[in-house]
Amino acid sequence: MKYFNGFSLKGEESFFSEQLISSAYSVAGFSYGAQRAFEYVYKTTQRIDRLILISPAFFQNHKKSFIKTQLRYFKADEASYKKEFLKNVVYPSTVSLENFSSEGSYDELESLLSYVWEEDKIKELIERGVEIEVFMGDADKIVVFQKSFDFFEKLVTVYLFKDKGHLLK
Image 1 (cartoon, helix red, strand yellow):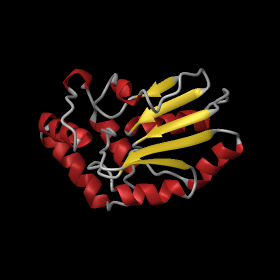
Image 2 (cartoon, one colour; image 1 turned 30 degrees about the horizontal axis):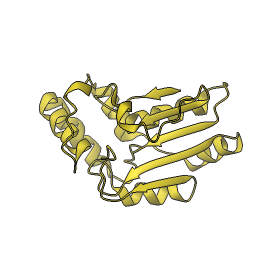
Image 3 (cartoon, helix red, strand yellow; image 1 turned 90 degrees about the horizontal axis):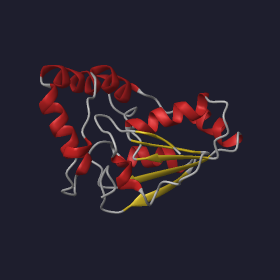
């Protein structure tokens, strides 16, 4: 299975053993990694049977001013921004991401925040035979859960984790 990490993270796939499937024909990603996994599957000519999107980063419902503000905060104090970001990733749990932290760049954050999920591309993957599953928590502090849920649930199978956050804990 090919896996794409979330923003400022590495090795966090160990948190998702129940959702991930060990198969050469599966691709998965968490948060920002879900965006990257989707684009990888969309562009590849290789056989992919299943795409697993865990807490996909979904910001297309936000105003441009929100994105600019996030980027400005990141640029002003990268360490504080990442600390607060990772705190929101684990909410409401108290899991430590200290051993899973990695560099996250301004360009990656900008890509994450400005990415637009397109229904037509999702439908095209489904027509190509790719089974798409989305896993999300309703206590997510990274994305507006309801907007994300409303978008994906009309297109693909969505598994909802009650009282769980972005990390599904």
